[in-house]
Image (cartoon, rainbow, N blue to C red):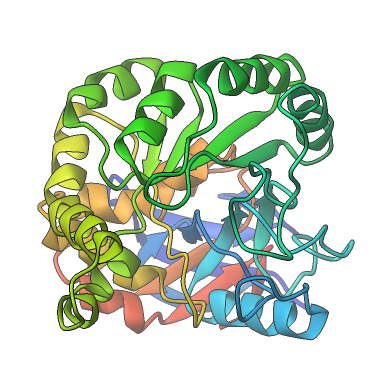
Length: 347
């Protein structure tokens, strides 16, 4: 296969670039005979920072064929990098390295408390053993995921336990993501200094400045949470539905406030079918997040947060090319001219 070339205006700055794929690395050094596969507006690949590929229902075991199919849909949509904060099992060796599928970081199976989370998924060690086990997971994959809270009325992980996990994981160079959808669970996660709050429904807006100052990101999974509102409103009211409708209704305003406070936002779908991170980016923008920042949450900001640079010499050779500036027309995200992954065209 010959050398691949793309050119156009590269985001986030919109400056003209002419890039050649030297294997899995961008270079600006011209290569004679390079194949110009696309030109237009260039992003360093989309990112879905909250996706659980490989299982089609809660509690189901990891299915390797389904995992490949889920990741293929991600790649076809322009996603070059995913983060899986929780998987149905430890993934196969090809996960994140297959040349036709997105790069990936993951947290292994979830950690939850006894009596909480989906049956068949996750690990439920004692509070005493959890920091040691979490550190071992993080040393292997870089991330750990805690189910910080669960049903309305369930106790969240104690703050002292989450702090101990954060300390142990940070000591081995890892990061901690926490599922939190209730006021107490969100408060514990922020107070303990976790690296990312997943969902964050019912997060107290007064905590946003602390999150920004200590570098705690928010992955609001906004499109997924608000998509169910009409269906739940149409059902007879229950304590659970009141919790959901109240939190999901307020979530767009919370997300806009988080952006204004300087919290790092990450676009994540938490939904099926995979490959729909464009919907989350548009949901962020519809909530009031400036289009540039909404797009960043699903591209260059998320990529940097997960440790990868963008469209620059020496960076991994990922890109997605559009006919027009997607910041002025987020509908462009559904129609990429080309998707480049590891220096190869995959879409």
